Image (tube, rainbow, N blue to C red; front, side):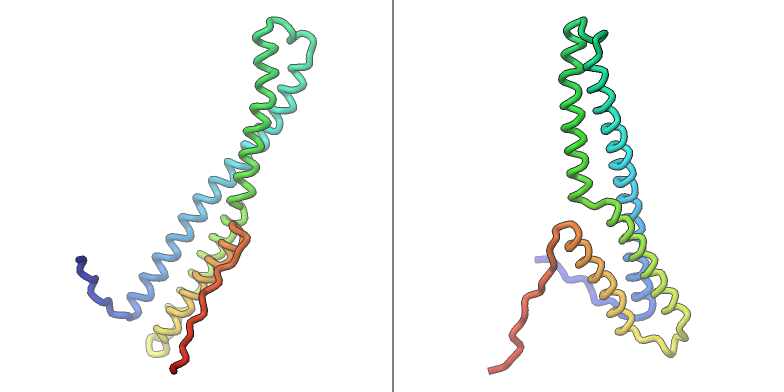
Amino acid sequence: MTELEPLKDVDEKYVLEKYKDKIDYYWAASRSNKLSFKRYRAWTIILGSLVTLISSISAAQFLQEPEWLKNLFSVGTPVIAATLTVISGLGQNFHWGSTWRDMVLNATRLEKERDRFLATKPADRDIVKELETLNAIVLEETRNFFQRVLDSEIKPREQNNSAG
């Protein structure tokens, strides 16, 4: 049996820690998706060009001898084309470009909300409302992510709260 973590005081420090955690997560995720997107785009261009180049060279008369070189080019073209197809499929499935964009937008939106919270006079701060805002932003982005990547929506089950 594990011991439960003691309850944290839900105060301004807690809210700011939550903002920091989420902002840090979204900036890290955006960097990762940016890198994946740039690699995907670069490899798509490189392999697309190579398919055309290798295909053209393999048809050239001067490359018919030696036989092993002709075979290498003959096999190389479809292998490169298949690799390009795999990379394109991965890009279409993981949506690195749009995910990168959404992560940056979400991190920026969270920073905006955090700054608004910090600019609000301490006496006027509403901790509950602030946590609702933060969680709504994260939930909205999560829904958008699953909609984009899985082409589906998260549909919470309805709970029957009626008595009797």
